[in-house]
Length: 530
Ligand SMILES: Cc1ncc(COP(=O)(O)O)c(C=O)c1O
Ligand SMILES: N[C@@H](CCOP(=O)(O)O)C(=O)O
Image 1 (cartoon, protein in one colour):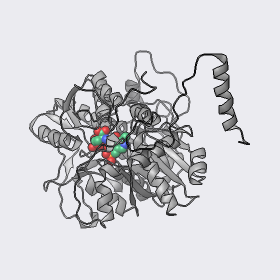
Image 2: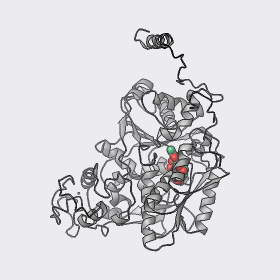
Image 3: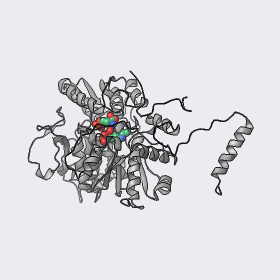
Image 4: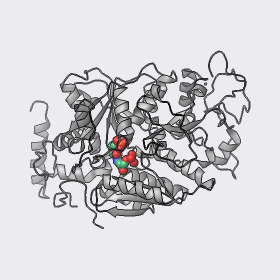
């Protein structure tokens, strides 16, 4: 197998070669478990939520945290439920009563369309917005199983019926949302720019948020003796890394289809190290996706790509988390890089649920950013949403979004139309320059985040995004997964790219005079009067 970098330049010759509704809940609705069950097993229903941080006796030595959760947490699975329904771009015109239990193995509706996970919103509405805000807030930063996870802290909204014992989690989520002070001020004249760093996660990308949900459900299905021998995906690198890690953690075989020579080495080594069965295929991601869909319809392999709507239930928690991190204030804009286009819908769904259930009163405007080399959504948007056409995706430094025929196109269009959304694109030079400039302010972002920043730069220039607009850029993966692209850039070894912000190391003779000379010139160039 040839392990090569994703980018157009693979040179290594450079210097680097080296709560309930007021006044009280319906009597048959017990308080969810965040009331400290161990010290107060059956709290009166009208009691206000208590944080779970009340000190508790340490669990017996022969008990693990799953056992402890089973002993302490009453089961509320009978209160809330979810099912698969056909995804409809116009829910008001949904006439079919087609639906499936989440315990069925089904990825497509009878008509071949997408599915969506539909929650029993009436049951969730029995509790008001304040109740949910307080509940979610009470779970942050704990190790109580499974709520220490940013995803499972919202379990009632994600997979309400799963037994805590079946959950496979690495306490993913709760990723930092940081103020990009210097970048915002220096490059965009903005004072309220934020980066949601979904790449600071177990396997280094936002895919963990969806994969914990999918693999947990597979774990449950296998315990129910459903025919699932393994779990498979096509991947541009991040889905496969997350799948293989969560499967390995649960002892479930994983199979990954990768486009040969199109993903970074750091991404490739993840499924290899986690013991996945890795197929390197001489095709692009769209080719791999086509194959995995065929294969999973023939073999007892469960499909882990975002075509499977379970994934999006986990991914939507990043949106809920953003609101939570802003103390339930709504940002004006959220910018998300898009490839297979599941994530933009997941963000929409998370924001929309928060509004529908009264946690907030509006949703942000969404921007989906694509690489110009793989821009089917952008072209569709520019055509006024007429006749979607898949494209042949060309090589891009944002290799994880080199996708020409996105499976979630309908979901993405729905999300954008319903959030007064915008689609932007970034050329290779724009995305690499944006990445370099962001890095120069202390970030270390992935090229996909460079795509999102480019969209922001363009929308600031055109005045669409105002200088005081509270804006969140979603950083989808850790920059350490994409070091080769940074090496190529800072080596100025990318054909037809000026690499304007390259910062190559200076080779200096190892003697005092030479080092002093170089340092004096550097300090002079940095002095305030220079
Ligand atoms: C790092 C990274 N960013 C962005 C995306 C785009 O997400 P989506 O495919 O859900 O549009 C992906 C995967 O496609 C990714 O791996
Ligand atoms: N970037 C993705 C592409 C597949 O997306 P998915 O969300 O449908 O699994 C990857 O990392 O593989």
